[in-house]
Amino acid sequence: MLNRLLGTKIGMTQIFDENRNAIPVTVIDVGGWFVTQVKSEDNDGYSALKLGLPRRKAKGKNKVFLHSKEVLVSKEDIKKYSVGQRISLKDFSVTDKDKVNVAGISRGLGFQGVVKRWGFSGGPSGHGSTFHRKPGSIGNMCSEGNVVKGKKLPGQCGCKRITVKGLKVVRIDEKMNCLFVKGAVPGKKNTLLFIEKQV
Image (cartoon, rainbow, N blue to C red; front, top):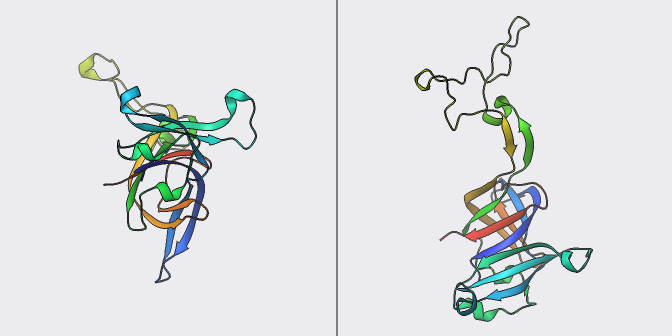
């Protein structure tokens, strides 16, 4: 059984528990992956599976797979898999009561100012003010006016790898190969996600 798996984000919805309480969940599709390479410690120095997600329409010999990533596997479990084998939710050792860590690339928001990027309050918004949404003074007296490294300034916002830990698995749909996780995960629709069972 695998403790790590790959998936794609379908979106968010809500389901109801026994007490009719609404639970916000993220639906993750973990089906459709195939083993493209088996790496063992004898040949490669570590044991892992290289998984590929085929495209709906192949655009040539070199663009058959939409995603191709590695998943670490233990020495004992690596012998159970072979090239061409399809990976489904049944191969993932997780139950309804387990928690998982989900990592992915967050949505890219482009170049943003300090108000949107860091949550600065900004200055007065009246007509006489010349402050508005500027960052303000960034120099430092003790460093002779040099800007200290790590200062919060305008720049690229989002598009970073983020890991959300301790998400509870609410439901497992083996027929559709979908995992229902409580809460939000990084990324937009069809984002590649790395799922790991929390020990």
